[in-house]
Amino acid sequence: MMVNKNHKTNNDVFIIGVGMTPVGEHWDRSLRELALEAMTAAREETGAMRPEAMFVANMLAPALSRQSHLGALLADFSGMRGIEAVAVGAAGASGGMALRQAYLALASGMVNTALVVGVEKITERVTAEVEAALITSSDADYESIHGLTQTVLAAMLMRRYGFEFNVPEHAFAGFSITAHANGAQNPNAMFRRPIKLETYQRAAILSDPINMFDAAPVADGAAAIFLARGDILPSNLPFPPVRIDASAAAVSAVAVHDRPNPLSLAAAEKAARVALERAAINLDQIDFFEVHDRYSIFAALSLEAAGFAAPGEGWKLAESGAIALNGQIPICTFGGSKARGDTGGATGVYQAAEAALQLQVRAGDIQVVDAKIGLIQSLGGIGSTAATHILSTVETL
Amino acid sequence: MEITSHWRIKKQRYALVGEVCPHCSAKIFPPRDICPECGDEAKDHYQFSGRGEVYSYTTLYNAPAGYEEQAPYTVAMVQLEEGPLVTAQLTDIDVKEPEVGMPVEMVTRKLGSEGDRGILIYGYKFRPVLETA
Image 1 (tube, rainbow over the protein chains, first blue to last red):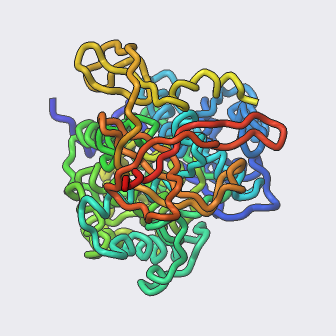
Image 2 (cartoon, rainbow over the protein chains, first blue to last red):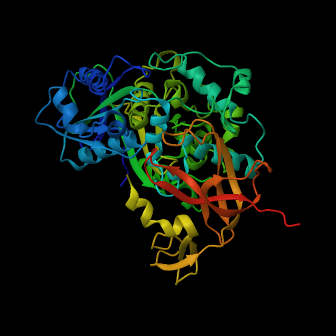
């Protein structure tokens, strides 16, 4: 059966509201206050609809805020006692996986409306405690016990990548430069100044070969998106609904050393392939790609996993400018984790909210021209979990 | 205190005891009871030689809580000569700069401690293979 993709159906799932807080060091705001701001903003775009269900994406609240049970906490704090609410945890992919759980609930017909909220409160603790909390997403017995951090795991991948593919020095600079150029125009970004190649080249080394501009800062923030089924879409929405054309997820080994090829993000590859199949589109129909660029090496590996570049060649898309806003495949259009700031488990919800703004032509100076289809990839750990979504505009709606 | 969790994997920490798959002969470390190669049950113990070469490495300056006193230190993924990759710290590298492909061997060292009065945690690290005269 041919599906007319320009017509909505009752079973389609739409994003009809988005809300984001700025990403940064919110010393004066608590976890629940940040979440509430994003939730309220997303609901306001729907005329303050009350969702039937809420899916909360978070990674670190139990470790850094001594707070678990975020589903009930945030439903109560936002005045929505009585709805169903649950927290979804998949490390840095919590946001993408929470969106997927909401999508499944709505697509099944069991739930008509859902709010997905991602929230992370990082700056309650000093760096060493944050590093210790972040590394709990890796293998405690066989990785973390050796004093590892996510940065050194990424650094070892980046060094091996350089070794195997004979990559020139500063090959990854383009990822950081592009992210900061886009982030400069994003009012919610943590860093709002573009950087020059020389800035990247002079940056201090964190863990060789990763320098300060290869690694995203982790900071506080909350993002929310409101989802509704096609058969209950309100008629007077202020912005065009954005359809979720495909949702897919996959996992690979948690420990990097347990993977047959550590330089291949197998989960990301699988999730992207399945998502493209489900949306029945080709890569060349994708207008932009929200990559989870926690480290610049992840951006390269994600581009390769999705099929935009052959293994070992993802960095060339950064060097050639193909990933810029006017390039062949723009990535991290709102600055990505590098410039917007990485909000742990909330990151995937920021990505979805930003993709929705692109498709609704609300991205201002960072608008991708004629953006009709966006791909989002949310990664957890060192790519152990991948959640991939494809969003689109529906012209004839 | 996590005494039991460290005690449970002492054979792995002290002697690199993994598994060998009785069906496809794959060598497995860390042990996982289901062979990652063929998917069959694999519970036969296998002691690794402890020799291998550096697959990748880096140096850490910003340590996670509990490891600050050790920083800076160098960590590596080591490809064991039997096949598996293992993650650990490199030690005794003051005489030789690490590089990808460098031959290394397992040694037992203190990995850390659970505070001033807590248990000491021992386990494997890797050092450059010493040149014999």
